[in-house]
Image 1 (cartoon, helix red, strand yellow):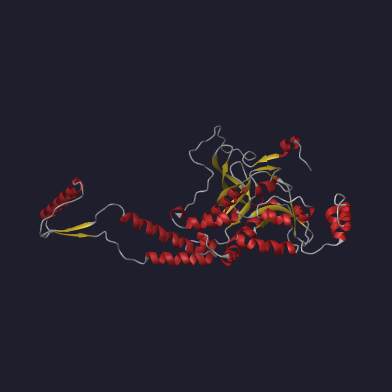
Image 2 (cartoon, helix red, strand yellow; image 1 turned 90 degrees about the vertical axis):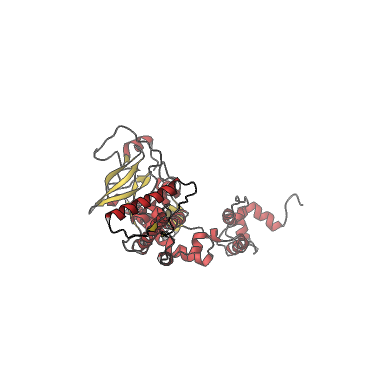
Length: 418
């Protein structure tokens, strides 16, 4: 049923406006940086872990997640043109496209371990049972857990600030990281790698701080107070010579001995980091070839099946459970994700695959043309699942070209040729 303007105004619902007024600020906050942008915590931004997070998030965002209709056998039938599908495929909110929205979800989920997806603008109250039309959605950080409610820190695009709001679990999608035990547990492989990387960064900062780290051996014993004062004076003299010299040169007595300590110290920290990195790659189903883009087809299939598919399934299952009512699910509505398998196919193999798919009547010619970025053909046969290598029967030609064209085909020519 098409909603009129009066119906939309009457049933409009906003998560921030339709709540108990706790803190009403009559001004709008501005910022020099984008306030709704996800920012990783726990030291992730200083390590190679961020590149792993971003790689997986980009691959999740490349999937096609749609609000679909299924047939009686739970097979994909068509895409439903709804506001929910508009959020999933085009625009999640005023600040984010659908791909940026998915990337935000995955990065926040990896960083926090659990993330909330909140319907902000809806037609109908999402906190009450019944049909609700979702207009916009945003990613929120769960601050506090309650039996039936959670406190979520959510960006309010009306005021430009992040606000904390209590929301029922039944009206929002709570997505937990399926790789939580590997990434977010206190002593997991990822957390151990982060601690080792932070330790390596601190050692690099110390070695590059510009200090000389010298020990001066004086030709006398400094046990008495007078000798210690003389040694301190000698140390200040050498510091003054070095700081006042253009090239950092100082002189010492022939009986004095200087030992420099800032030489590289051999340790097994780098070996531990390499070991933890390889272990993390194996547990996540990622290889170095996946990260640098040189992986072959088998490696990418393993990566998509072991890493991408579990995360995408958790995402769409929670959307289906929270954003579709039981009545909608019984009517055949669902949320599915699709991956384009032709993205990994080189141009040299595309011709053979196109021939096999069209010859076995799996794809039509126009569908293959869409894959290679060509506009559809006007030939009616290009939209039919037919094998062009086999002569079609009169009934098939009649269905494709119509009665008049079939008559011309049977006569073997046209009026102009006669």
